[in-house]
Image (cartoon, rainbow, N blue to C red):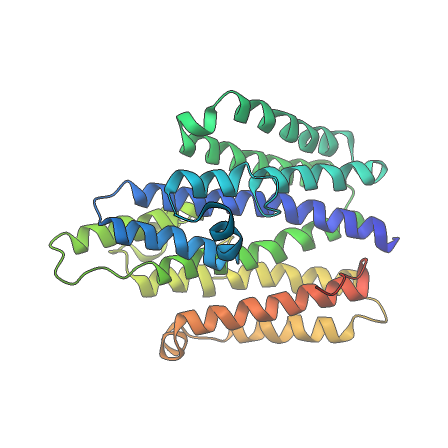
Length: 317
């Protein structure tokens, strides 16, 4: 497969997954912002989300003072923000259009319709009227795109590069969602509602990765930060966990590997092994934030390696 074609397919899938995960991060922050809490704690959650998305400086330059509505607008509609949901869905559509001949009609129509419909929904005020409904729609369209790819595409290199983009982006974003919560979870010890608030915060995090029912099935007990982290980092049977995503990345790299990709495959295998054989107690002993920061750096390096070995190399920033 031509590297440029693989590049478009890879980024089409990454942008679709990124839109979904941005919706997930926004939804968990929006839901937790509705809980009884101080204005300082609520603001901390929104700043943490911007920080982990590496958009704090850009937002601050444009808006100055932080409000919930401004963050949502910036992360959903702002086309100058390349990570906004609208920007991601447009980029996914443009990448799909560039390789229209490598896609089935069903895949192209799903991605194209998503872009057309999101513009109509924003114009109709759906986001302003019910943010959670809009975020659920974004997640549904991402699910639909993946399902149509799986159900209609030939399992060839085109399919593999789409899946590679999906799982690399998913690993990155699950780590960011988890880190957002742990950075924003400081609650005043004197707060009489601390236990109740903490439960709802963690339940919102689990729902943001479709993990609430899974958690109940696996642990059958109260929600604790340690078990949430274990589920989202180390459980191979949890679809959005870090280790599950890396299972897929390593398997796909083995299928598409070439004479240039041995080092990238080695890095992926080592990262996968470090997750597969880790224990949650050891991770918390190091510090979850430090662990996730290191993971994000390594997944970024892995993405650069994939671009170098298979795709159109990224220009140095």
